[in-house]
Length: 148
Image 1 (cartoon, rainbow, N blue to C red):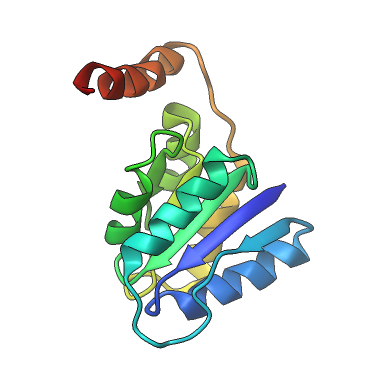
Image 2: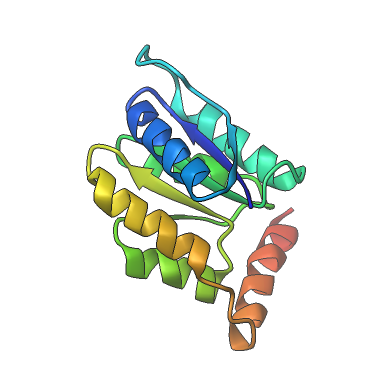
């Protein structure tokens, strides 16, 4: 699977760790940066992740900042992205099963590397269940259309 990763300066170390783990698992990684600890603005990195999903460069995405909240908000500005901020595997699984999330956001200052890997594994292993959930996911796009 082709997976995009992005992070701000607070999340760069966790992003790099996850990129290595994903490659070991046989995934193709699209690293969107940042690649240093120099301060950057997180909205840019959430937006870049969403753009990679929207234009088909990636099938799934993982974005990281200090809390995971800012990059999730930024990514979700793009209607092609359904990004869930997660901190444990059950949320990552449900994000896929019920919400058809195509991205997750992690908080590097809130989650350890082992838990982050567990979240990513759960996210990638889960499948969207469709059914009653499809109607609700469709409504997410309808809300956007109705407000514009």
